[in-house]
Amino acid sequence: MFAVDRLGQAEVSVVVPLHDYAQFIVEALDSVAAQTLRDLDLVIVDDASTDASLAIASDWVQRHTARFNRVLLLQHERNAGLGATRNTAIDRAETPFVLPLDADDVAACEPVYES
Image 1 (tube, rainbow, N blue to C red):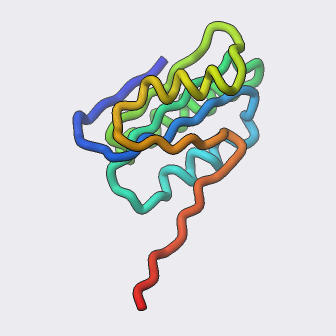
Image 2 (cartoon, one colour):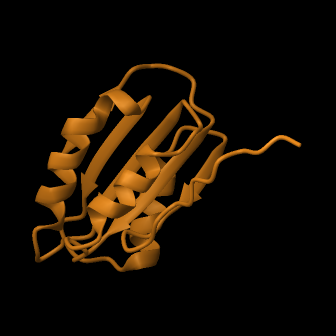
């Protein structure tokens, strides 16, 4: 569906399985963009959503590609379920570490305090 790769060296891929979460996906993706780790990859796999999830995610990634080293937006032709969708995303990750994030969740980003 959509791919951008700046060919940098990210350490972490955030993988987001998506199915009928149009009302939550922007908040989830905004929380990923807000992370303090500079170089991140993002892999989103839409699991044949029947709502506007894919369109919303597509619009979001196209507006935020500069934030990420690599962005993939993929789509299953048929609904495969959460596990298979997460596995598709993990299989497409190219980094040593992978953070699964459900589309109706947010990644916490807290300031770092030094004592």
